[in-house]
Image (tube, rainbow, N blue to C red):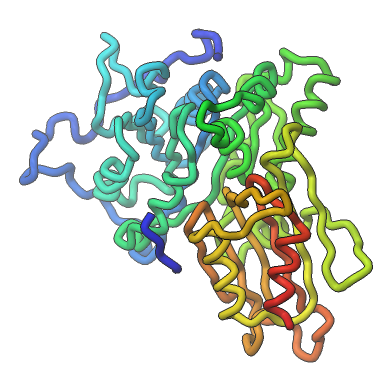
Length: 393
C-alpha cells in the first residue's frame, strides 16, 4: 500500500419490520459491550464491504429495504450512513414504531443487521466487529451528496480495519428520469459535481426507474454514463430490484479477481499505428471521461511511480490546453521490468496500490503488456500515453 495524507415514492421507502436486538437489554458503556457470539469458522476470514452511493432520491433506500426484508438466506449488515449535507433530507432506515432513530445495531426478521449513523461509519463498523460470526457481508450506504472516494479510502488507510475487512466494490444507483439533470449540474467552484463523481467511481451502476423514461431517453442516459465510466457494469432496474448476486462478491479491488482483470481488458481501445493505442470517450461537457492506454514492453517501476506521484499527488500533469488532469479512479494491469508476475494497479483520488498477482506465461514476451484505464477530468490520452511511454524505454 502506498499511503498519502489524505425520489422515490413514500410507499417504496417503508421501513422494514424490526425485532429486538440481542443487545437491547445490554447497557451501553465502555464496560458493557454487546456479547460476542460464535466466531466465524476461520478467524482469518475477511469480511467484504460494499459501498452503495447515489444521488438523492435515486433509490438507494429502496434497494436496501429489499435486502433487509426479503428472505434471501444471506447474513448482511447494512449501515445507513447519514453524514454530510444530505443527512437531514434522507429518511433513515432504522426507525422505531414511533419514528425514533436507532443508532445501535438492530436485528431484522430475515437475519440481517441494520444500523443508522451520522459520521463516516467507521465507529459503527468497529462496533459491528464485536458481532463477528453473525454476518457475512457489510453494505455501507452514503448520502446522496457524498463523494464515495473518501469513504473508500478508509479501508486503505485504517490498518486495523483492513485486518478484518476488505473493500469489495462500489455500487452507484442513478435515477433514469433525472440522471442527466444531475450530471449536467454546474458547481459554483467549478469542481466535478457529486453525481458525476459517483458514476465515475462505480464498479456497478444501477440505472433505476427505467419505467419512467422512454427507450430513447434510456439510451441517452446510458450513453452518457458510459462516456464517464466505460468499465462499470450497468444494470437496468425498476424500484431498485435486481439479483443480489450482482451486488455481492464483486472483488473489484482484488488482484487475483477475474472481475477486476475483466474490467481492465474489456475497456475499449482503438488501434493505433505506433506501439501505443488509446481511446477517449467524452462526457457532453468534455470534462469527465474514460481514457484507456495500452503499451507493449516492460515498465521501469521507479519511472512509473514517479509518473503516478506527479499525476495523483503533485497534480502537475496537464493536458494540451494547460488544464490539470484530476483522477477520480484508475485501474491497470502492468508488466514491470524484472517482475515475473502481473502487477495490478488500483487508485482512488490520491491513493494508489500496486499488487503482484498471477505469473506471466513463461517465454511469451509478446503477451506482456501494460493497460491502464483512467477515469477523471481533463484527461488527455496523448499526454498520458507519452508520459507512460517514457517508463518503457
